[in-house]
Amino acid sequence: MGDEGRSFLFNGTSLGELLERLQEDTGLKDVIICSRNPITSKLMPLRLQLPPNNNAMHVVLVHESSKGSFL
Image 1: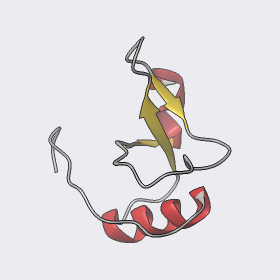
Image 2 (image 1 turned 60 degrees about the horizontal axis):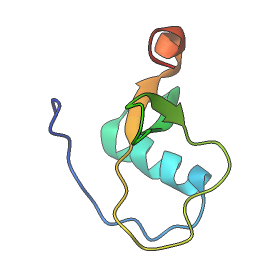
Image 3 (image 1 turned 120 degrees about the vertical axis):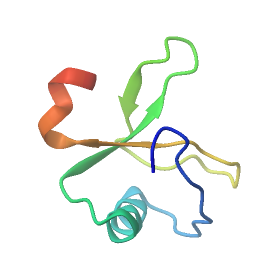
Image 4 (image 1 turned 45 degrees about the vertical axis):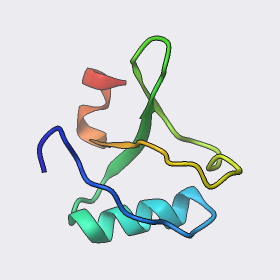
């Protein structure tokens, strides 16, 4: 996939559903869904819920084992 990533339409409502979809699509397990902070550019884990709108959203998957390196 590289740095350019890819896009898809997601109609679910929870982080759990998004995580399941991403794991199925990528074949990756033990990952954390993150988004990049627009001010600091640091990766921040998505923990509680998805934003309450239908806007495009950019996410990054990080292996749990690399948590200390990136998060």
